[in-house]
Amino acid sequence: MTIDYVRELYGTPFLKLVAQASRVHEVRHNYDDIQRCTLLSVKTGGCPEDCAYCPQAARYHTDVKAEKLMKAPEVLEAARNAKRNGATRFCMGAAWRQVKDGRDFEEVLEMVRGVTELGLEACATLGMLSESQAERLKEAGLYAYNHNLDTSRSFYSEIIHTRDYDDRLNTIGHVRKAGITVCCGGIIGMGESDEDRIQLLYTLASLDPQPESVPVNALVAVPGTPLEAQEPVDAFVFVRMIACARILMPDAKIRLSAGRLSLSEEAQTLAFLAGANSIFLGDKLLTTANPEPDADYRLFEKLGLGLRQETSFESERA
Image 1 (cartoon, rainbow, N blue to C red):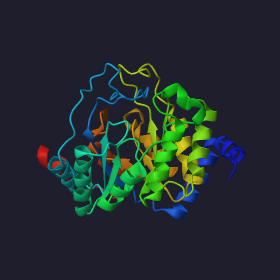
Image 2: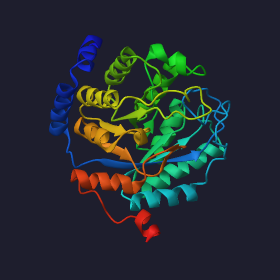
Image 3: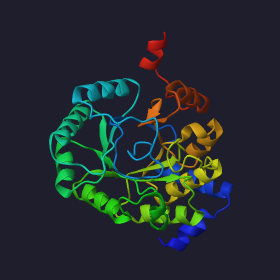
Image 4: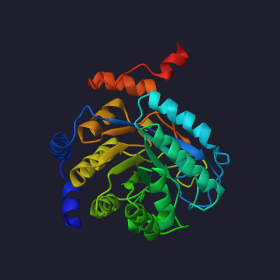
C-alpha cells in the first residue's frame, strides 16, 4: 500500500466508494453484528494537555469540572449496567497526560480486573504509557487500549503542542508489545484538509499489525475550547472516511464514536453500509453528548438489525 493508493481511494466517487467498502465489509463481517460499547470517564477534567478539541483541558474555560479518580466499586457498578444494556466492551477514560505509578494506577488496575471478570472486553484510555505499565495492564486483563492519532502528522501541531506525534506512536508500540489490542483512530472536522485525512488513513493502515479497532470521531465543538467555532463536519466526508477505513483495514472494528448527534439517521445508516460496525451506547461519551440509547435502538429496529432488547433505560422509565 502506498500513499498514492490511499489518495486515489479517497478520491473515488462517493457511491462507488461506498459500494466497494460495503462489499469488503460483507466478506469480512456481518451487517447484523454491530458491537455496542460503553465509555465512562473515570477521572474527569484537570488535564494538563492543550488538545484544542478537548473540554477536559485545565487551561480552557468550559463547563467541565475537575474530579478525582472514581473508585473501582462505582466503576464496576456502571460496567454491570452497561452489560445489562447490551454492551460487550466497557471503556474507561482518565484525563491524564500520562499514567503515573502509584495509588491511582493501582485503582485502575483493580477496575480492569473487575471489568474483565464481568465478561466484558476491558478497554482503557489513560494517556501515555510506559512499557512496564502496559505490561501490568495486560496482566490485569486489559483487552484493548485506546490512543488515537487524532489527525495527520503535519496537522498535529495545529491542534496539540504539549506532546508530539511520536509520543503517540511510542505508546501504541508499548501497547502492542505488551500483547494488548490497539484501538486507534482520529477526529474529523478540526479544520484539517483532505490531504490530512488521507495522511491519517495511511498512517493508521500502515501500522503493523493494523489496529483491531478504529474509532472515527466527528468533532464536537465545545464552547470554551479553541475549536468552539468549527462548523460540523460534512456527513459525506465522514462516511467517506468510514468507507476508506473499511477498505484499508478490512478486519478492524470501525467505530462510530464522538459526534453522532450531528449525524442524521440516514448518515449513520450510510456509515453502517460503508463498513462501520460499532457504536457507543449511553447519553455521554466522556464529557460530550451522545444519542439517547432509545434513539439507537429505534434506528436498529428500522434497519432490521434485531438488536433491541429490554434495558434498564426502559425499566427506569416504566
